[in-house]
Amino acid sequence: MEQYGTVALVGSPSSGKSTLFNRLSDSRQEITGRQFGITRDRNYGTGHWLDKEFTLIDTGGVTGENIPFQKEVQAQVELGCQQADLILFVVDGRAGLTNNDVFVAKKLYPYRDKVMLVVNKIDDNTLLGNAYDFYQLGFDDPYVISAEHGIGLGDMLDDIIARLPKVEVNPYKDCLTFALLGRPNVGKSSLANKIIGSNRVITSPMSGTTRDSVDIQFEREGKKYVMIDTAGIKRPGKVEEDLDKFAVIRSADAAKRADIILLLVDASEGLVSQDIHVSSYAIDNHKPVIIVVNKWDLVPHTQDAQKKFETELRTFFKFLNYAPVVFVSALTGSNIQKIFNAMNAVDENMHKTIPSSLLNSVILKAQMDNEAPDFNGGRLKISYCTQSKDVPPTFVMFCNNPNYFHFSYQRYLENVIRTQFGFDNCPIKLLIRSKRDDMLKKK
Image (cartoon, rainbow, N blue to C red):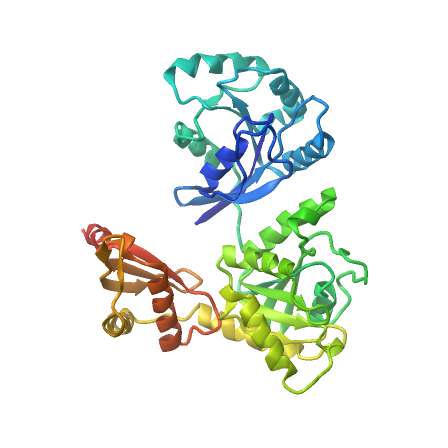
């Protein structure tokens, strides 16, 4: 996937920004509905168009009316506009030009050069005339779309990609890049300083000292690394200050750029639900994870203490059963070398390749040992599989019908591949394709 810049969606309440966000990101993570002004905060996602991706920011509805939270909403919209390479000014084509649209337009005039006017909710030819009213706002020709029905998005997305800068995801050549992620005050910056052997990062017992992501290049035992120290990721309901909100997107960006995620948890406080939220940044980006249990020096070292804590971890992080666990103390520097040992082992596995002949014999045996269940009116039959060049290890399986592939059988095949080929410390991906796709590709 080619990576491009950042797009912010801005407009008055109920103009359809969240519906457009869902359509462009192919997700349903944003709340939508008929209630006026549901979105109050910025939300981030990844927009998709063909083989290209871009960062997407949804913002709260802007209005000149005196309604609750409007001051905070406008502050967040301002931050989103500053951060974005391109702004989609979304208006409601059904409602026509409103005073709120005029109010938003005035807010966007300082960013005129990067504004694209989008007239939404035009899903009927009889409404096309409404688009002309919006020329009064003083922007270039509008894009007429229906986010709900997917009408008119192709031309708009072509122009979005043409105007966005291309982004180099990992600019560090021949370096292993890793990011430190965790909730506030788990000791990320203290660990960062121990890893590089100097006080390059500000540390403090106060929660939230780090406000931005910091890239640090260094060398250890002849190998080059880049460490990304990030701000502590707060629960969505606790993200209040502007700088906190800005830090969230930086952490998301760090997770996207890193080869490996070091997920820090606080042994002295135990596991909390926020740790699950932080882990989602790695899982959503299909990144390998090493769970670093920090502050282990503050825990009574009873017999089997580490074993018991790791068992609790495995139950808690259900989708990270492959992740290595390292117990450290950033304060004393104990077991820092074990982090590097784990990272190097994971990196080796991430680039391991399996010959297609061997892979196919293993998958054939797996199907014979455990036949796929009936699902969606048929039974899965995998005829051929191969490993792509993608990272993490990605296996493309050609079958009679992808709709027959039940989730439980996918997990079964993942476990077979892990066991047979030693992918025991990193994520793997299965891509399911129709056998017909393979035949067309060969032609």
